[in-house]
Image 1 (tube, rainbow, N blue to C red):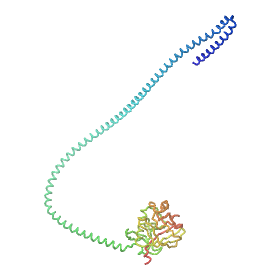
Image 2 (image 1 turned 45 degrees about the horizontal axis):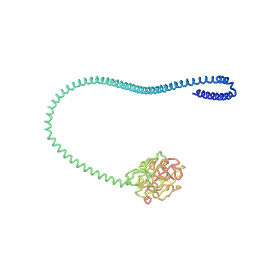
Image 3 (image 1 turned 45 degrees about the vertical axis):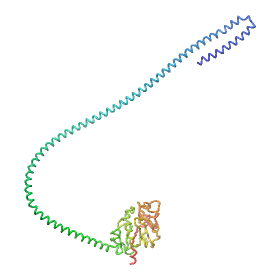
Length: 422
């Protein structure tokens, strides 16, 4: 197409040149008519090659048009064939999808067939095992049939034995009837004896009850509620209202007679990192380290006014004491709250005062005023504030101290205030 356009442009340019040349030539001929023949000959010679070229261009244009028509026809045929190829491809894709579905169904069928074969093999194995069991049961049935025959023989023998025993029973029944009247007489005598025995048992129970009452009264009279009657340093039983009988360690050496040791640290291995229930009940050994128990201390100090005596031994062997004139702790509902009274003693500093009115704190019951649980921090139960100026239940080391003085021994003792007056 581009060549055709170029040739057309050239043709127009040549044509214009021809018209210009013709016009110029005619003007010349007007002056020289004689040269007309020569001019015509010259024009013919000039135009003839152009006319030949124009014929050639026209023929080429006609050939080009024919070829373009053929090319358009070929393009349309090619487009139709392309659409046919597209339709064939789509059809092929659909058939391929169907083929994939058929393949999937075939694979599934093969898997189902394999499963069926496995089930058949499993059923065959079960059938074989059941057949073996059937053979075994058949043998067992034969054995049992033999045993059944033996049992029938034994049953016949037993029937004959039963007949003989029935005859003996008849003879025995006659003897029993004869003895029945004698037995009734004996039963009447037994009933009379039983009545007498029941009456004696009731009398014995009444006697035992009276004896138990007398024993309890005697124990309550003889067993005191403090160590005041004892003048030694030993273990003695006490009878405290609300809690009953229990043993305590009495001390008459450190600060005079009548003291109950409620806490003791003398270098033992007892752990004071205990829970609330253990501190409530008490723990340890009177021969080593121990804590008497919060509930016992509450019951003792609630009966009457008590004083507290604290015995301290520092690491360098110096001995100190601290005393409080009105020591007591509240009940469990109030957290065994500490109350002290007036302070006196040889130790420097009233360290226990910082803990007065505080509830008891253990690793499982946080009653202190600190952000953390002091019992967990110091591995011991105590009447912590936030946390302590003294801690007589702490582990041996820097935590076992009184106002910064490290201790190797500590004891807490109480006794009724009335004991001093006597």
